[in-house]
Length: 197
Image (cartoon, rainbow, N blue to C red; front, side):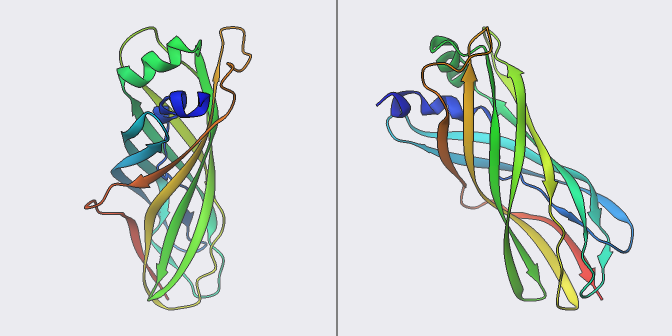
């Protein structure tokens, strides 16, 4: 019951998946950015939309068949609504931290790999009023691509593990909140595209 009542607090971050991305072992890097809204399913509080911006400064321009890519940095910036902030404040949450695990579909010339990436949510203060932003950061592991041709990185759903904390740094009585979040239908999910030769 307590998780159902307060899991809406977990909407402070998403991921949505953001979502680590891969940088080619060969060729130069390019920035990429995509805005997505995630729909988070809460057992009692209902559905909450979380707008997020996923970005990376070093996506691949190209890659070679069979040559592992280098890990790349990724970040997800999510805007927390005032209603979610109010719930956090009410349960005693004066800061939040946790992890965001996302799924990514890598379409390598028709051959699809599904990967996961876990991003870290550093301890972030929760203000006493208004909206605020939370940033999750991390990396995506190397990819070994078997086919030559166009390759796209597409962002998918996310699972959030969030810990609201009291002013002294201890977790609130709610503990760790787990919430599944999905990319809302009708949005483009292609984050980046490049050639493999």
